[in-house]
Length: 258
Length: 234
Image 1 (tube, each protein chain N blue to C red):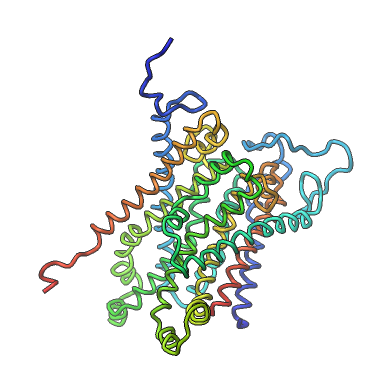
Image 2: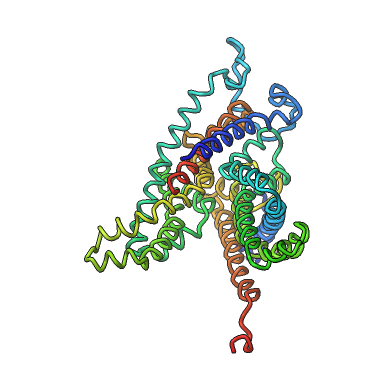
């Protein structure tokens, strides 16, 4: 990674931080007024109310508006919870996609996975498979990304199959797993990972939807709950964290692909 | 005592007693209109900036790429949720959120295509012959815009339709009281055991719209792809 690319990444991170903190303040009115009943906001969660007794909550951009707690432990907990279930799901999807693409399996299931949107599948599983609720987000996220990633990897592998160095390796008597791993997969892996990393925002959006629907703790539920409570500092920090996460994944993968 | 079965009730009705035969087309039209607006507006906005910037000096182009990198990782659902935190759900917010979600990828695509055209011989020759940047834009880049829009429309329409359904399903998309496919999915989820036809009907309608757009793309590809004439074959 050159100095110029490091400087570019840092300037982008700085701009993202400024953007996520400045733009909500461009809306007329302040946070206290936004919390009030005259704000005209129609999404209201009446079950969450600030405590009547006790010390007044601290009002700053580093504390939640409702309880006055520091934002960072809450964010760290939510981020950890999201990564804990979504990363294994995405890893499983990628691993299965790699295997099915290598063996040319899948067929109709790949088509279904690529064609069925998460918003159509998720409510059915939520309603009609209540026993699966703890496992369903994992399975749904893995199934949702398996199809597109299978197609992407399969397309790259087809190109690598006809590459001269693969044919030369075959002529030298290299076959099977060794041929696949060293000569077909490893040369195309960085490009595949870079292409997948550009979908980081979409992947995160999918996990947010599943967290909200299945009421699973994580970054998605945190941002949704803070929106319902109109806890703007928490909303800002959650958005910033999610954006940094997607941005970090994207930069990391694009740096490795060079 | 038995009652004669009315045709309007054969597909069931929603929780307000409205028949799905009238409700689903209405919701599909509204969702389709939102998706169409996003699919038409986004490529125009996404094309305009890279087209102008590609003709400008290298530094300005670097700024465009920087802006593109800035916008690409923003998760659209989170932007919409944040917008919903500071304003009320509405069509404006919905269009803004869906547009912001689709814009960066479109800008990247348009910039790449613009660079491709500008590196072709006819564009290089016209610049070498003294054509101004505005003339190059008018004669070589702008005529390509309808083709790009045609190529991107089905993809953008599908993405916007799904995005609208997700945001309305979460309660931060369409205004409250307006029926779209997302709000019907939410209603179907709430009453899935009592009235499964709402969820089934809405899911089928959403998938049918997406399938229809795939069909439109294939038909458009067939009609708009230039086929070789008999004389060209010779």
